[in-house]
View: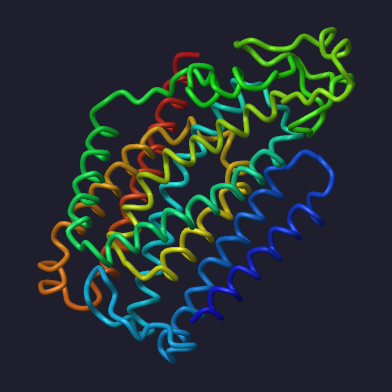
Length: 359
């Protein structure tokens, strides 16, 4: 089975190298048309991988699918593995959309020029992949040893969903984030951007972009006078720190959600990776429209609630719905998300209609 992991990780590394080293080697603006095209490419890759999952588990390639799934105690044949992979992919993809709202807020607060946003997202997502890998490995080991942890995950998901539904969740000032405050305390931060660099040496010329708001910073004239070997962080580095911190917070929600579906580490990791890889292009496709999807957060909360309930009632649901009960969960998640988007679009059109009548 180790060859499956090696092959998949090698494929991801090649795709990331092509992304940064070929398609986005130089900083440039990412158009909505290009972002939509790349989003379609990543979604196609994610969906097509389900076919690979089916044949790999059906044929038990390299010994994959020969042990019982820790969550439901069943062997994952081709159909069951593909269902779990697709359900996990859709759940993780939908939860990652909420991350887009926060990333847009971070870029707006730090006034990150659109020209450099792709670079922050690339390294942010690379860090997210490493973080998810560690969390998935720890979670799989815990569930294999202590199955009752699944019920704690379920309660956590249900409480998180209720918090999203009934509590105000406006995001705080990034300058008050403890990680950002610690970063400012440990490292000097320049007042202005220095191109696409996260770290610069003293004396490096600043870009024309404006200053980042809030917090102690090193004025440009001080940077020029500092010792040439002094290393300084740029506001772009602060934005990256905030993006990584945000993903850690979101991973706390999303990782238990995928363990509600399967305990197979390969299915969990691959579904997470494909969901995250498309996040960057999805951001550029949706960043200007996030405010229009007013009911999407409610839909995401309902998704978490459904997944948490499914985790609590897994045994009963399997007996009542049969071996394909994960397929029903997938259809439910798609229906909830589709309903949230449709309700948002209807509300937006009604507001536009009222605006035309009052104009």
